[in-house]
Length: 418
Ligand code: SF4
Image 1 (cartoon, helix red, strand yellow):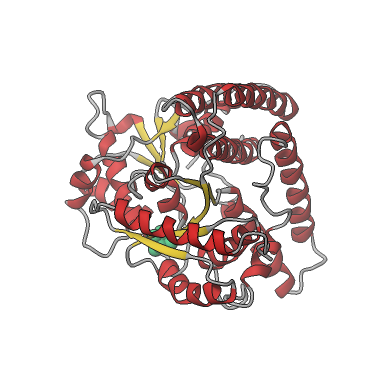
Image 2 (cartoon, protein in one colour):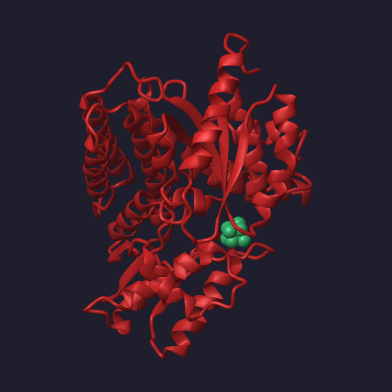
């Protein structure tokens, strides 16, 4: 599919893992002239619409993604000839590879000619058309910017004096950052500068939020399946529940996954004996460019995110995971979740929560590993929360977990989390 022809006059809906991530990615598409916006938010209607087409084998993120696409069909001005959905795909055992075929089938059965855009590095992003390279770079910056804003939100909100202040600043900041991302016909350098300006303005607004310094929230790391941990609807707004009970959450971000897949590519090239090759050179250059962009976008937040730094290289996380789940034998999110849980432990968190969709292999494997991590780390509490789309009252469970975390912190005060 060539976007220049096929996406003309269509609105492209970006699936929401996090709202901010989808908003920034939609802005990145708009920067190359594609009319994009986040797919609708999840709510009860999401399940109601998706349920008709599900067999019961689908994971929660698949059901939500489909349901939210179907919500577009309920919009008063819906015209299938004017709609496209972005739906990346993958091979392998994870059900992520089923999303696209299922969504295609559903719309085919409904006889609605919507388009699906499935950009992939394997086909050189040819779905995007001639601006693919431009979009890939802007898309990475969009990921970094949305990760930063989310982190500022989670770090600040538990301390706010007046409820709602941080959410207001966050939404305003997101709008401003999106306006900087979506500028058209400017150079990479100009876009980066305008994003840095917008982020600096956002930082200043976050700094102005009146805080109650007497509050001492308990730092909780959060890992788990990428969609479910980032999509607040699918995890029943668990972070807000934790905050209500006196916690402060450091959530694993999206950039981590991007660094991991890049590093896997490097490793695969080495395994194929291509350590010295154009492919490897391309990886190294891309890595350097991405890292440089990331540093520049993060620079204004040096003080604000002190203590909440991400590792300088994804291999630090993979090395932490190695005694439990070595990357050579296990793949994907389970390795990152275990390694990141240990990273949070080193950084002084009082406990870790892993968010997993019900029946997802990643969570199930991690759950078998965590008791050993807890034992090795002097009782460091780690708990998995499973989500299946049915609402449950989690207040009691969170209260108990935070009590455990508080107990762990008190008993390990001054001992360091090495
Ligand atoms: S990781 Fe699990 S929940 Fe996520 S798409 Fe794959 S199977 Fe579904």
